[in-house]
Length: 304
Ligand SMILES: Cc1ncc(COP(=O)(O)O)c(C=O)c1O
Image 1: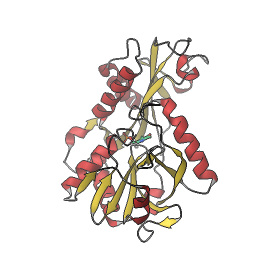
Image 2: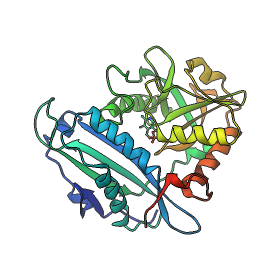
Image 3: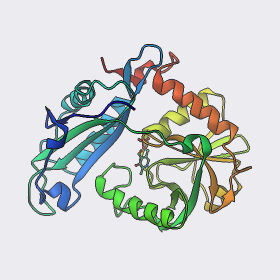
Image 4: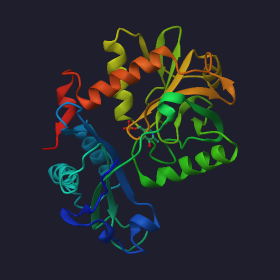
C-alpha cells in the first residue's frame, strides 16, 4: 500500500484531506445522526485498473438509511456515485482502496433536527487482515446485538456501532479477536462488523434477515457464489450451540472480506484450521471482486 489519500470529497467538492470538517456540536456528532457505507475498490492484477465492488447496492442501502433517518433534502444517488468515483480518481491510487461514504446532519440542533445534511467521501488505503489466512478466534459476547425495535440494525447508522464497539473492546480485553453477537432471544446474529456463515454437513447456513443483521452486500454475494458452486445454502435462524458443532464458521463483510473463524469460546471449529468450503468461497470472492473472472461484470463499476 504505497499510496496515501491527499484529497477528500465534501459535499461534492474535492478538498485537501485534512480540511474536511463539521461543527463539534453538529447533530451528526452530538446525536449520532449519520449513515454511511464502507465500500471497496479492487485492482485487477492484469489490467491494473480499479473497479468499485457492488457500488449500486451500497448506494441503494444508503438511500434506505437516509429515508429511515428522515433527512431533509438528502444528496442524490447520482451525486453520491460521482463522489465515490471522484474520491478515488482524485487520489490516483496504485492499489486497492477502502471508501467511506458518510451522510450526516451538519447543522447544530436537537434530537429532532433533520437537516441540513452534508456528506463526505474518502478513499483510503486499508490493509487486508492476515486472519483471512490464519483464522479468527471469536467469542460469543455477553452483549447482545441491537434489536430492530431499539436501533435500526438493518440500516448502516454510525450510532449502531456503539454497540459493536463495546462488544469488540470486551472481546479484546478477554483475549479474543472479535465477538459474535446473539439476538435478544439467543439466536446467532453477526459479528460487530461482518455477517456470519456456518457450514454443517456441506450446507452453507447464514442467519436470516430478521436476525437483527445488517443487510450485508457481501452476505448476498456469498449466497450467490455458494449456490453457483453447487453448495446447498440455507438462510435460517441459527442456535448458539451450532457455532460449537459446525464444521466451519466464517465471516464476511466489505471491510473484513471473507475470513475463517477457527475457534469460538476457545473451542476449535472443526479441526481448528480454516475449512475447505470457506477457503473455496474466499477464492471465489477474490476472483469476483478483482474481476479475474468474467462472471458478474455488473457488480464491478470501472473507476477510469
Ligand atoms: C455490523 C455489520 N454487519 C455486517 C457488515 C457487512 O456488510 P457489507 O457486506 O454490506 O459490508 C458490516 C460492514 O461491513 C457491518 O458493519
